[in-house]
Length: 148
Length: 136
Image (cartoon, each protein chain N blue to C red):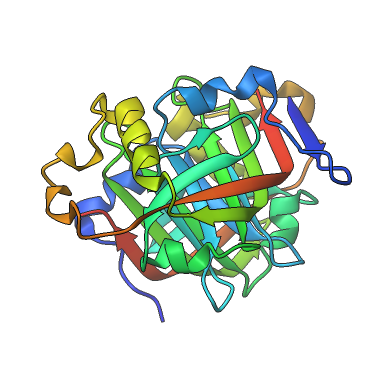
């Protein structure tokens, strides 16, 4: 059954407890950002939830980075791989973009998704070690749709 | 202009993978929902019902994006960006039945959803593929 939640005033809109497993399990999510011309771009990405913000991580200069300036609108869809009728959509805006702790954050995501606390351990991205600036983006939910 | 779906990644739309469909709300905010999908004559097709938000957001000319992630290997994916070139009620129930057979192994869509039978107008949306991004 679908349920909608909306942000009211300054009160933070939290991810419902019963759906937080979708952020603790290593589920690759769909992140939607808007291109400068307004067209939606959808990419698979790692994500987590810090109890207040939904967080993703990228690197300076990428299209995602350009599309995720503070205030930018983004949407995320997380589908339970064990039951595709159970899902969570978060619509929100970028509340914070920070380089501080962003490498630690990438490492934490790597641990969650790959079981390796060194983000650059993966052969495909080893060449980027020390050559890119990681960035953490915090998404402030303004609307959450769930279904189960 | 229409572009072809790369052969190497076409399975991501042919296999019963629930994909993310992104449409734009009237205020420009992206909405993302899980949907069933198939490909016919080079067009990506999705199915919904009249009056739903997706229906309102998928008028002819609307920009839409579909992301399919391989459930066997999440690092393999394809993003299709395009435009709705047709939305039709004709054959739309047949189409949802085809999708139901593909995804649920149940060629009668409403067999799993009796309460809705005859109570909604199904719609098929045909998406012209204009841009494709894939993983390596």
